[in-house]
Length: 345
Image (cartoon, rainbow, N blue to C red; front, side):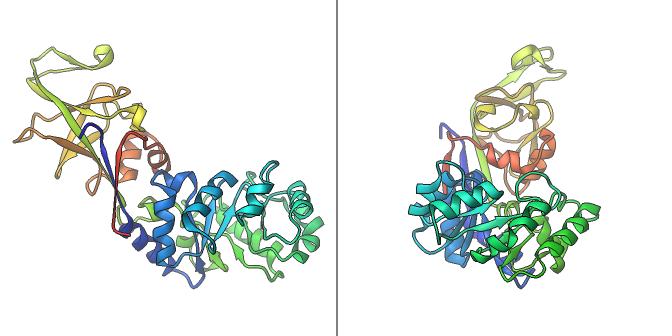
């Protein structure tokens, strides 16, 4: 095992989708952008489609093209960047559904692909993507006459249930879409957990599918095991890694594992993160480098052949906290050098 082994439990992923789907009576789609949050969009989406998901969300048309190849005809693939210049052939040939974000995109779409499916994205205060209320009011009748497949917006603060922004966005979305016949969607994972007022006709979980917060009941989906390349015994005063940034105060046994920031294991984990041997944490010593990490294994009763950096004892958000970031970044940063192993699904 020259590289780490990234094990992705598709049964756990499907269970998370079903658990989130059970929280509402709405249709439940799935967000699989960024290559399925780093876990492989094709494998993830096929497992979810077998479980019953029929509506998927990606960031850009190129992601949609890869997903269509994986899923074949049938499932709806919504492109959240909308109909960008140069996307027309992909959207038309591969039956992608752009989520239109402004008047220019709407004109481009109806002129280039008349009668082709599209959705609408509205901005309700996040100021990121979507039509602002005044723009929507000016063209809503024209847009609705074309029968959009979905009208959606995105919550900015859904991971903070008490944040006043949630109610403000809900009120605005309800006000500007209350009299339309098209299906509506406001809730991703955090919005689902806010309750039925936010569910509307379609929910679209993302991070919760992959075992991340704010879905704290999620089943862990990933395990990342890093092989031990070498173990050495240090005397007091000896140092580990670049910059001599960690110095042994006592006799210390150090395992060097294969993995580093080139594999998405962030340099910010230096001196603060841990790997695990079974149920025992093993602190990182010194700096995380490009390909290697030093780990304290002095307290272990055996010499390890591998250590886990993600798994049942250290979920993605715990590792993210040690790195001063969020679970999304940990997952989407996972590198290409790992041996990927899929189970279940």
